[in-house]
Image (cartoon, rainbow, N blue to C red; front, side, top):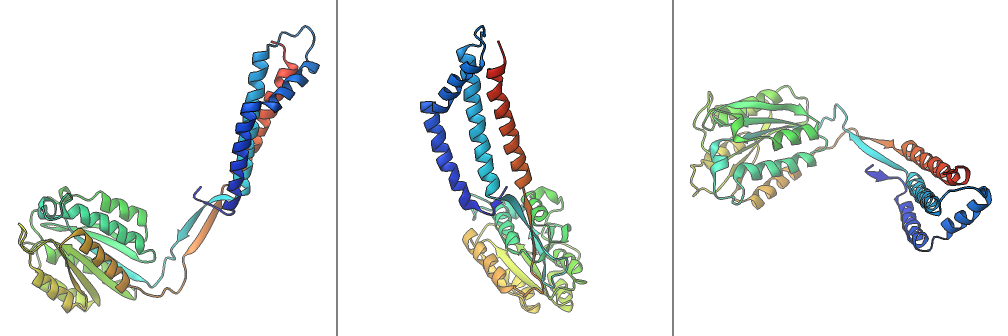
Length: 317
């Protein structure tokens, strides 16, 4: 249960709770039942006072629990799901994430490394893009597809969270291969806008295709590339921000430099604000009610309470 249709009714639990405390201290109801029980017991009954009190206290507890579930049922418990339409004509996004050794062994994002910070902020970014399809490409010395374009935010979040530098054994930084693979996954997209977010901290030093040639392919298919250079230029690993800036300019995208986790978050927020499109249809909301389940628990508790209340009056121990 993650929502209630009438949550204000839950405030009725407070007086019920206070009444329960008062009942527990004074025991007026239990005392009345205990007195009334003597009228039903035969003179030769050996039902002990302690056992009768136990049953009566147990009965009171069940009545209060039943009352609590009745209030919860009246509040309208349930869950809400949002379903994105299969065709939204929104934005298709491929995230190309550098997971090379330099992303892990850097020291300018302490106490976390560049890869950990990038993963955390990318997960936030993905959750904000509710109406878009997103895919993931991981690259180091080679590029591999981690996820095709998908609306499944939970799966994408798990894939990003589980990403590590051990996912790719090839050493190096193949920026061109990552761009080509991302372009290939976007080239047949019918979305109004197609973008690649390239996030890297190193110089392209390996791969089958150079970044400049790969950027021409992206431009030919109308794909914008947002390049994010992570880390400080005076850091321990060589960077080439000029190349990344050239890629972004040639594809009508933008280049960003993120020298700290705070700046990287601002960059992703800015990209989130730049890439917006009006949807032809709103996402569908489904409300699943848990009212029958709660009502069943209420009647079950009520039944047990009735049985436990009758038992001391009819049974001889």
